[in-house]
Amino acid sequence: MTLDDARAADAADPLRGFRERFVLPDGVIYLDGNSLGALPAVTAARVARTVADEWGRGLIRSWNDADWLGAPQRIGALIAPLLGAAEDEVIVADSTSANLFKLLAAAIRATGRSTILTEPGNFPTDLHVAQGVAALLPGVSVRAAPADELAAALDGDTAVLLLSHVHYRSGARHDMAALSAAARAAGALSLWDVSHSVGAVPLDLVRDGADLAVGCGYKFLNGGPGAPAFLFVRRALQPTLASPITGWMGHKRPFAFEDDYAAGEGMTRFLAGTPPILGMAALEEGVRILREVDMAAVAAKSAALFDLFAARVAALAPELRLVSPTQARARGSHIAFAHPHAHEIVQALIADGVIGDFRAPDVLRFGLTPLYLGHEDVWRATDILGRIMAGGSWRDPRFAVRARVT
Ligand SMILES: Cc1ncc(COP(=O)(O)O)c(C=O)c1O
Ligand SMILES: Nc1c(O)cccc1C(=O)C[C@H](N)C(=O)O
Image 1 (cartoon, helix red, strand yellow):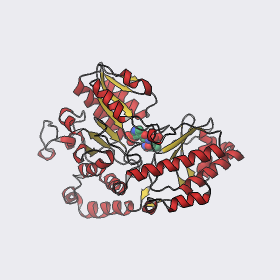
Image 2: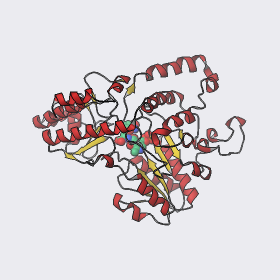
Image 3: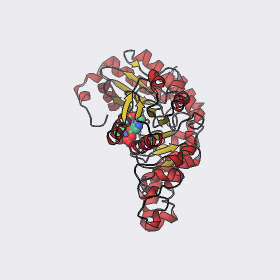
Image 4: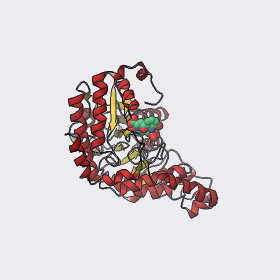
């Protein structure tokens, strides 16, 4: 593909109109929307209105008048179709880590079983929260099995199969339907972390038999740094699960101020405390944009951007080893390569305006976000990468200095 071909592909792109819905700095090619999504153009004004009008003038009346109280359910319902879930199966609350804790503990209690089955190399918070739950509950342990041994590792002790649908490092995507069915056949629940899937690939949690899911609001949903997360519980399971964080917002009647806890109806029981309204407002705007989008078009464009990226790197920087699956249906919406000097190369790219990220020890990762990234961006980014590799500019000692956040 030539630069002209890339431009022609962008001109014919059905999603090209979405780029102007985002604020992106000049001189930057942003390839990290899988870690922190870009700022939607409407979000600053929405947050400013929430602050000045709803908080400043409405004051506490806004819990009713601006429906602050209903934000977790309202935004959950907005996210639901992106998950292939019903509106009453999703609620927005807390962080992905906290929601993992709630659902893991609930799953162990509901099944009466003792093992959390996961895979080695899952996102650290998933593993760490599982370890924390196991440390808290007598007899509970975490077991990790490689992807191709997971189905065989499910047994009568497995309470819950905990997996990231799309792997944060390689982008590899699990077969949700097959693994959820295997978990169910073993009498276990399936819990999917869809942080790297929602808004990135078409999801159908109900069709694919997922029992439980959690995910981030700040990646492909473009909800802003530290945006609230969401959780999904299959409707039939909701009455059987109990949150271990029995806060007042999950109570059946929070404003009755009763001494004794009574779990709220449906997903409400998975709330704990007061929702962060400013973050909720930003998240709502990000999700609204995604709701206008045909996810099949997003998936098709993501696949085209990936193929272009992979082909250009193979030609211009063959020393980078592709670690993402080559088949589109087997991956999410980022591309990853391994190189012993991945950190330095990513830093050199950032210095040249191409923002990707480094995942220790040796991975360069580039988010492919079809709403605000075009073929020309990929063409230019890979051009810069090729020059950095050919010229060896990444060897500059300043690129070896590790930042706190990579
Ligand atoms: C798969 C996955 N789960 C969870 C998280 C983060 O969870 P939290 O928002 O609680 O930090 C991330 C990224 O940070 C992630 O990639
Ligand atoms: N949540 C993050 C943060 O607070 C700081 C820096 C990065 C993140 C991320 O989201 C990392 C991301 N989940 C990943 O896949 O690596």
